[in-house]
Image (tube, rainbow, N blue to C red):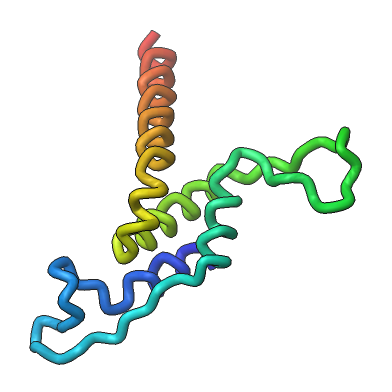
Length: 113
C-alpha cells in the first residue's frame, strides 16, 4: 500500500511543473490528502504511538524496517509534488539519510574488522 501511495502521488508529475505532458496535453495530477501524508509520517518512526485509551506503561509496537523504508520513499515522492510538504520534511529526510549512512559505515567496519 505504501508503494502505491508514492506512485499515485507522482501521477502527472512534470519537472517543470506546468501540468503538461511531453506531447503538450494536460496530465492527470493527484495530490495525497493531508490525512494520508500524516499516516505515512506516523510510519516513519521506529515505534508506533500509543493507541488512545491504551495503558501508558505498555510496550510500544516497533515499526518494521521495511515498512519504514517504504514510508520514507512514499513521503519523498509526495514531497516531489508538494513544495510546502517538502519544506516541512527536508530536515527529517536528511537526518534519516545521515543516520543510515553512519549505520552503514559502522557495519562496514565490523564486516572488515
